[in-house]
Length: 136
Image (cartoon, rainbow, N blue to C red; front, side, top):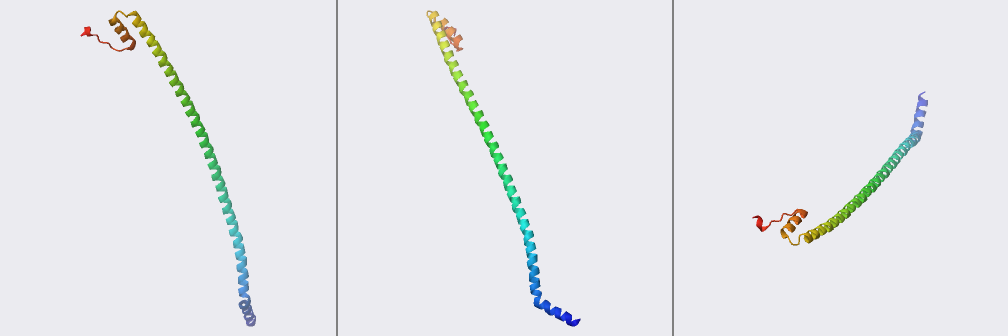
């Protein structure tokens, strides 16, 4: 038995390095396959996150475009309303000015011989107080 153990020990010393190397290659190959699967899973996760972020960015851009369009519509409507108000106000001022001028002409023609009455009626028309020298 001792001879067999010595023979076995000699074989182990002679071929043990090769056996260990083969075991190391098999373990390394298995480990590499396992790590490769982890790497593939990690790569897939990164790609799915990247796709998710890309979709989220697209949605945010669409929301931003929609908000910008709403803002432009509101701004256009606002500008149209302001222009209409300004136009109507200018027309009203012009009409009022014409009406006041006509009323002043009527007052002057009706009271051309009475300056006190003319001043009084113009005062009433425009709401401007007119002081006569006789009222002191």
